[in-house]
Length: 506
Ligand code: ADP
Image (cartoon, rainbow, N blue to C red):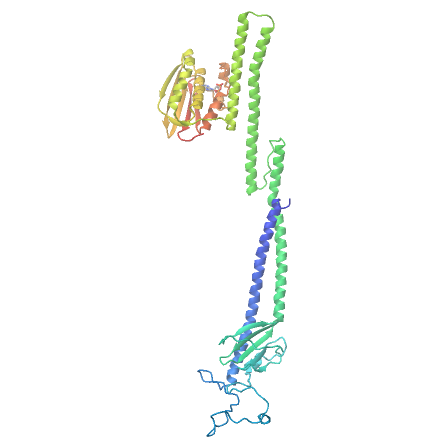
């Protein structure tokens, strides 16, 4: 449940990021500080080792000449003794053990036995504190020649890498030591306890953890507040949406922050709600109009039947009643068919069979269908049809043309004219139906495509229309991706122009 909440998810992500950043930052700071500290210690130790090396060199001026190392003297070889004549071939006569004295390690004529520290070295190692700098010097054969009094008792001769004369460092327990093997193999070592330094580094680590923890807490607290503030509009939107879904369509979201993303979302939702309210109102109006339109013919049917059944009638009277009932029923059927078609068009369920067809051909067929009706009223239909190819369903477009033509007949004057044109213009096919009728009053102009709208003239002329013809025509043309436009002059006539794209399919 918690993990599903956006606020908690944001918080977890932020915590993860903060922990990563703080850990990285802390570890880097710790490492940098540590290496800086050790670098400084190593530098101090190195300086001391270099000074001691100089002392070793100056203490033993008798250095072997450059070249191959001297041969190690044989055991028992006495460099002070001269070789007497006759001697030298074969070992000297062995003396009895009591004359020979205690066994000593063989001596090297270049082997240093005592080191004189320079004034500089003495000052560098003046302190005898156990935690301060200490030193030790070993002879080539690994004999400890000298060491400072504060040097740790467990001091050991470092291992030597073959021929390596660089100053090297090592950490032994809590001691940091730098050592150096001279080119002849003496070893010079300087070291000091790093207990205090390790403590300081430890303290810094603790401090970094504490500071990191504090920053993490602060960051999480700030993030939690910020996320709460950022998500508050979502709650407002949710509350408004539930009020709207409860039936109050006039409800709108109160937009406090207009510039934020949620403010923009709220604006979009408000305009969606406004459109929903409008379309709901239209829908309600449509249902009311539809029931009203159906009620009238039903009332006619009932009234006719009741009036006829009041008393026995002649056959002719029954026929007249039946004729009225049939006409009314046909009107009802037309109305219900139109309503159903509108519903299908609204929901996109109307089926179109589109292909490339000639609007001129469609217009010709439609004209032939309405010609008898026009002739009845003495209205002439003039055609100027040129090829107009469009990707359309000829059946449905034919329905539109018939509707326009029947309006042009109904609202025309006696012996008027209807002009039908077709052609292609600006990459689109057009079809125009113009009449010389009563025209459309300015007040009606905006509404003639509304459902069930009938102009005053239509009512007074008792046109018998349902007020759905133009609404259906416009929906069909729109489904083809086209448009329908009207121009009219009251008392002079009207012209309806249908434009269809040549390639687009609905
Ligand atoms: P109706 O079934 O009433 O004809 P329509 O939707 O086809 O319904 O037309 C709506 C209204 O538009 C008509 O009642 C009429 O007032 C007006 N109208 C449509 N075509 C014409 C026209 N050619 N001349 C004048 N008015 C027209």
